[in-house]
Length: 417
Image 1 (cartoon, rainbow, N blue to C red):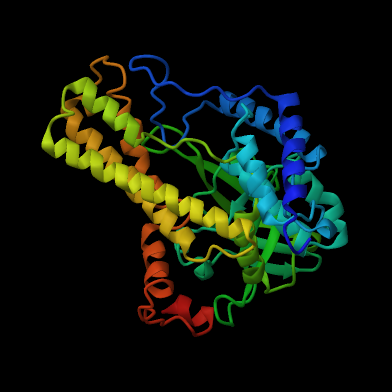
Image 2: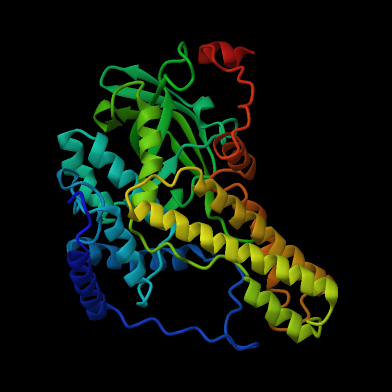
């Protein structure tokens, strides 16, 4: 289907609405009333282990029903287990889905279905596709991402976790960090160095690793905002069968780049509110009697304008995706706008609240802003740091000269320097 048949798209939309109406109630329009309900100012959800298990079970039940109805991998080619429809159909599904009270997605669900499931479908062997692709796309199995390391976050190609071939197995030693929801995962999608004597991008291989395998240790990281969403994962001689290698040996960088590209085509919910908003700030200013203060009004206007700019950028990326184009550096602009505005929103709230930010007076909707302020810095790191986004924008949007690269030698030489 090279050209969009708009009549078919509209009839397909009607089918989607009918299916959603059969499994979920329409989403109620949210009416904000000061002093009522949860202020919902958390950027990273704070749940106990049991609460998060129950939450994931609700999301998985919905995603399994959705996959069985034919809406689980809309833009993935049919030969890889998807519906083979243009990306505009995935965007249309997300638009319709927002109108119904379905369980919102989470990081591990998005990674499992939108990234790992698609990667196994495209790069996996027939046996791997049979064993894993449907299980990931349907969320029968959950998979975390084992990419970042203490010394290789923004510069992912500099990773040093190594995998050494030993007969039909690979022996893995090293450490990964910031692995979201690793404690709930059945498998991890691992990048490891398999050849240190070539340039750093060339000697990486991708694997699936069972998270309960001997030699794999998961340590949750308690965030300053309360939850333990992220984890450290240690590999101490963990053995991975070669049958769990995804793609060719030393071709992991290609697999990783394609996998991250699948994210824009994933048709998940993923529209969970993150922290406080411009409207929340206006309500707070009105409650505190500061809405006429010229300095506060300037801060509110600044946040509002940036919120509208971010919404416009999201719409632009959605249009590009729907037309089949790659969003390109617009995604970096959107990410940078979002993380920067979260910090600005927190700063504005803190300037209005003063000591109420650090001492709970019992006033509704005041001390709760600490959840936002403590969570905002983490969003500047998640999904690519602000610094990396600025580099992408500088080089690919503004056409500025690229930074000097001193890492073109074989990785083993770089590691010694």
